Image 1 (cartoon, helix red, strand yellow):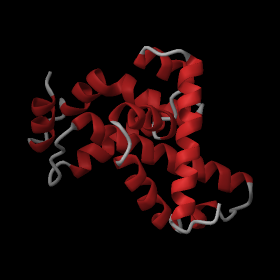
Image 2 (image 1 turned 120 degrees about the vertical axis):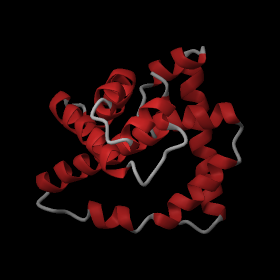
Image 3 (image 1 turned 30 degrees about the horizontal axis):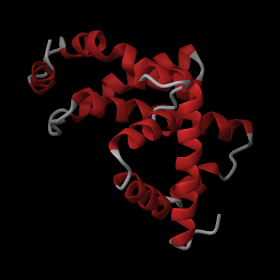
Length: 170
């Protein structure tokens, strides 16, 4: 089933939207959640929560790219669950508050990424957005693991310099 049809099922409040989404994007969403959480049960819960969030947000939202929409939902839900687990282990901690305070840094990183060549941006995003292992990135882009590691190292250094030039104390 194509994405337009799946989105229309959500808009029509047709319950077939969930199994259609699961059939087409279940593995994709599970991969994102697993890479962040490393726990099958938590990953499955986040994916199920993704379907619920998709159901409650369509309508009024009509995503242009369903895979990106679902990936973002899964990633955010997984990171929230991860932060919750970390906070529980540390007695509450400051991690959630600190993450809220870094919005300016996020904007600077977005600008940095927009200026990268598309292939390097994809490698960076696969590793640091989707938490993909280096081996998976290498396979996906037809590179050696060493090449991916070197590329990521150079990108981190460029990002470090870019942020320092903009006044971030690293």
